[in-house]
Image (cartoon, rainbow, N blue to C red; front, side, top):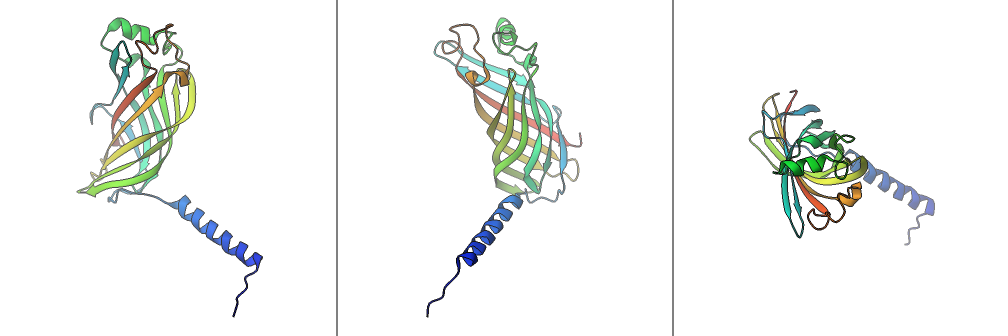
Length: 218
């Protein structure tokens, strides 16, 4: 005995499946599995740890390693890591390369033009692909991809970076640590430098590592 299903019925089934899948994806949330509940405001604080950006330029004629300070704030829900939003910034005038004259050149119009562009900044819109690494003893660690907009040298564009977040539940005085590593292509942000320098003494692509530490309600 054959059973016939009308096209209209098939369309209805397909729509129901689509809506069901979409709803599941939209409302999916990953947490640290800790006691902490609700969205938390976190401000970066050097008393918690050394908020620092490290950058490396490895060119054929020279390798440059530098550091810079990091500031900012973000909001995180320990039960919904994907909903994290905020802003992390690096003051251009805090960049140190180990040579004072080189630091001065870095701030100039041929390079980062600090006079017109005070900060390098990343506006976090959400965290995607979150995976809980561990959760025990009031401490949760998760990895994912931070998505948002990156601003450098007067250019702002969508970017995403891998990120690791550690959340320590201290009963209200919670601590959060964030680490990331990514690369920046100078040409993407219209940084040309002195003629002939990029590609010989300064790498076309810069490797950046950021470590950030903050406290809830600080």
